[in-house]
Image (tube, rainbow over all chains, first blue to last red; front, side, top):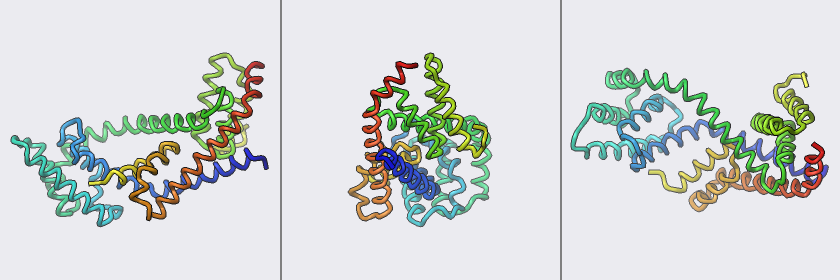
Length: 222
Length: 76
């Protein structure tokens, strides 16, 4: 095995390990992300209305009170952050209906009561409709946005110290084939199409792309 | 409130999910003083650092082959 092959094997092994480690921490990551967002709101790093941001946060995490994913330390942190946000709301000279609802919701979280109480029901009726409608549109956009970010990160990694796009394509195709990486496959396809539009001869690369795709999908149409 | 190191660790994990390993290392480094005793943190940090180093090494090897690649380009 050549040095490059050894390094590629190690690359693949390390990436797989990290993928699995992150996958195992997926639920925990979601909880920490939610707490971090609440922390940002509490710190006042919000550009929009506080009640609006809190309404969005409650709508997104309404199931947390019944979820076993939250550790006691997480619950304490959330309660402390909510108490801080409540204090900020109470400093406002004018109290809007939205503020009253948010304050009531904060009190419910502080008491740890699960969903199903009248106050919660009232809250959900007011906020859930438009949020669900928007979410369906945003999900595909957010997913594609995230894919583009990953592709760009892979591209930057592969592009380091390279002199030509063909070399990057070659490495992307190797990654797509041997690591069966969906992102590397997408990146390869994108580069091939770009080169094709610029009148490069891309047939050998298209062939390799199809082979990698067949391996990825488990098919035999290469 | 979350301290800056906790936020940095969270960012590092989010970047791992997006496979942006180079930037993940930067955030791991920021979080390192606070999590020095955390074995899971150390394992993820060292693995990511190693992966970035392997990729840099591969990139250098790839750079050695650039002359051949230019010939391919000229052929097309």
